Image (tube, rainbow, N blue to C red):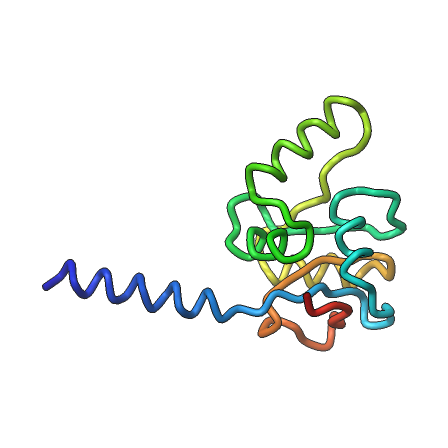
Length: 130
């Protein structure tokens, strides 16, 4: 019975996680961006943005990159390893949670990041819904 309850609880957690809507956010004065611009920014391709993302292993990070850059966690790790090794770039700064993301983005007009749409408040603006 305990195993059944554990499985049920884990299943419900997956359902709630699957309902999370990841959005790209910027400073409240930021303009909307295209999915293509977001992809370039998060892959360090000549963007004027200061980019923040969640720590490696975050489910939201995986969802974001699946939807926007088209890369899995392992592909993303390999991509950044190659960029660093060849001197072509460094991965974006990371934050641990939504409040740290909001603090980083609200304090810099050229900063962008992503978060669950449910965590958006007046300190950041949704600039893309992938």
